[in-house]
Amino acid sequence: MTYSRIMGTGSYLPKNIVTNKDLEKLMDTSDQWIQDRTGIKQRHWAADDETTVDMVEHAARRAVDSAGIEMSEIDMIILGTTTPNLIFPSSACLLQARLGLPGIAAFDLNAACTSFIYCLSVADQFIKSGMAKKILVCGVETLSRALDWEDRTTAVLFADGAGAVVLEASEEPGILSTHIHADGRYADLLGTDVGVSCGFENAPNGGLKILMNGREVFKMAVRTLGQIVDETLAANNMEKSDIDWLIPHQANLRIIMATAKKLNMPMERVIVTVDKHGNTSAASVALALDEGVRSGRVKRGDTILLEAFGGGFTWGSALIKY
Ligand code: ACO
Image (cartoon, rainbow, N blue to C red; front, side, top):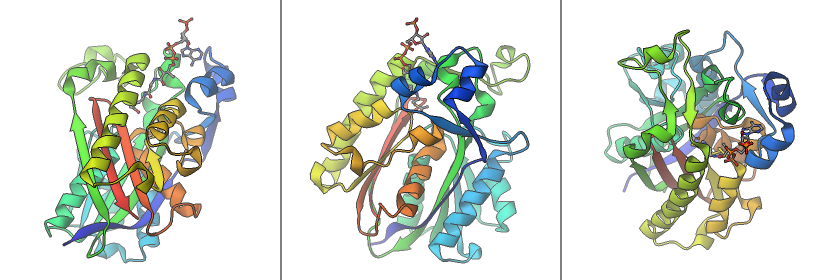
């Protein structure tokens, strides 16, 4: 049987660090409130001239280096983002040109904060079917450009960054299973009201704003992530104690703690980056995975549960033998 294995990881964070104290100067908020409600202490924001494709190029090159392969061996790029450079060409195509890989398939995928899990799931199917051998899977966001300064509830949460992995065909597992879901009935609870075919009247200055019903999102995220833990364990005939690491989407420390509790997992076995990175949406799981690997905590052979929840609603998980 062919599996897909993560051969290398990489990430990138913009240089500009914005602390909660910095935000106190921009809006009516406090370091105490942000830390108590979200666990966030600081986040990174892209420089004015820094784009989604700039950031993901760094992460992609680092992932390919850590996989120990030549860039020319990559035969597909799948890029998760809600903040592409342009509507089209896709950011995956712009990245493909930068990496010097003309001709290989390259496409964007948007499942909001669950994008990276969706990308992994799609890449896994291409590898299992034999259609690709080495896929560059990326998650990246420049959400600082979509913050609404009038809405302190969302403006303190979201941030910028990029993560990437190289997935390779292997006889050894590998990705054990992926589980992806969506429920568009909840579209109004988290998203934007500016688009291409509609919504321009909401952006008189061309601005994109995130709209969120935080309380409802919080409740749904905790409930849904609990369910996907059960679904993932059952599909693999595993017990909670079989999981070595939880690498969750980094939206809110309280949501992460609720999922860890569901798994009876001590917080020492959870990779937490939300305190330093804020919510980087499509990038967050890939960034946390890279941090877990590079810090030496996540080791080859460990069983890792990746999970995420986001706008749509979308949610998903990936169980991985690293
Ligand atoms: N600073 C200070 N006070 C604030 C701030 C702020 N930044 N934001 C809101 N408040 C105030 C509110 O005005 C309100 O004041 P009031 O009681 O006088 O009316 C009070 O704090 C409580 O507001 P709530 O919105 O009820 O606060 P809550 O405890 O729900 O926390 C939060 C808000 C952090 C957004 C929480 O609901 C949450 O984390 N929800 C999930 C959001 C999330 O994770 N989104 C992303 C997940 S999916 C994805 O990643 C796309």
